[in-house]
Length: 310
Ligand SMILES: Nc1ncnc2c1ncn2[C@@H]1O[C@H](COP(=O)(O)OP(=O)(O)OP(=O)(O)O)[C@@H](O)[C@H]1O
Image 1 (cartoon, rainbow, N blue to C red):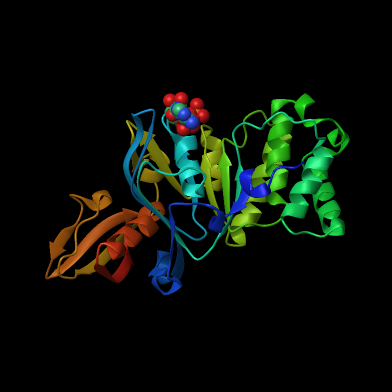
Image 2: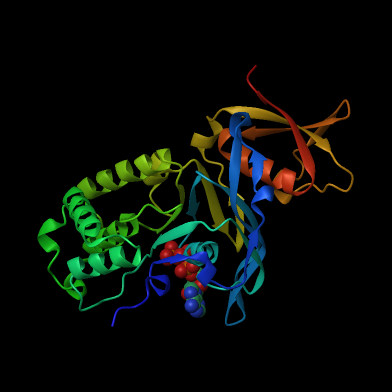
């Protein structure tokens, strides 16, 4: 009677195809401020077409644990498509998606299907699919519904709920059990301002626990509130956004040694300078993790990271 949660909004990656699990020993790199951080997933030369029309072309992207990334771009540029690719919900036309380990993903879709189930029935069932006990499910959804001002609407069939309320139900189902990666497709659309505040506070709490957040979004204040890295999709390609906020960011100098055959990743083309046999690149704080990840992936060795202002 109920759909499998894996076919719904929450799933684990062993259910998806075109996915390559990578040996965990390969999954560490030196991250921001010299910490060891976990590699989580990578897109390698991904192209996505629908009916022979290319939507996303040759995207390469590396994501680390605990990054909070916002994907921006005009309507129809491919944000939802990219999130589905990252989540393993759709098979890329070309290229590979690599997952390090078996992260648990939860997904808040942009649109919620109309259903006869009430919000309570739906949340209960989602909790059971997450493996929570009856008592835990109840405690959890009740607390979340109170925080999101939803308690009075729990017994209304989902097909009669407003867009903003549906969005809240969708967020709550994704938070019943804490995932490793939370994927949010335009999560604020339709939510009232009080619920938006609760949402932002909740997401930042989850970020402090190490969760990775991948979000598509149009609202700058949401991006500023919860994201540490912003990518924009433009004409089928992905690039780091260069906003005035980013310009005011702290800068770092990364020093690398070049191993034989190491290539310069696209993100760093024209930015690497050679100096006394070493190679340096200046980066903004928000791009340091992806730059390090791409460089190491291409065969470079990170030697030092220093504050660009000193
Ligand atoms: N299953 C599909 N079959 C055919 N075309 C699709 C499919 N899914 C998406 N598209 C098309 O791919 C393009 C990108 O869609 P997508 O939903 O990823 O964009 P988006 O950036 O999330 O848009 P928005 O900001 O409006 O939500 C659009 O032109 C859309 O019509």
